[in-house]
Length: 79
Image (cartoon, rainbow, N blue to C red):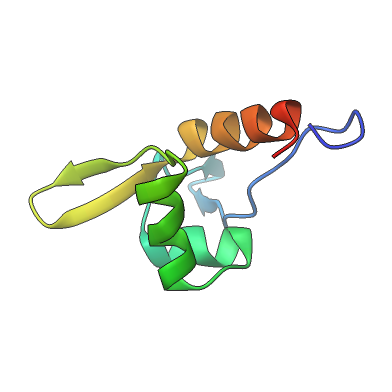
C-alpha cells in the first residue's frame, strides 16, 4: 500500500468470451513494464532483494500475486 492505497501491478488482463483473465505468472518483460524498470534492475531485485520467482527450466516467471505481496511488504517496511 502506498499512502493507504493498494499498489496495483499494471499488467494487461485479457478478455476472453466476456471473462477477464489475469495471468498468474508474468514474464520478465512484463515485470519490467509493470515496475517501469530495466531488465538488469529486475534481475538485481530477484538476486539481491528477494523478488520471488518460479523457474521452469530456463524460463523465469514471477507470480502476479507474489509480486503484489512483495511490493506491499517493501512499502510497509519502508524500503
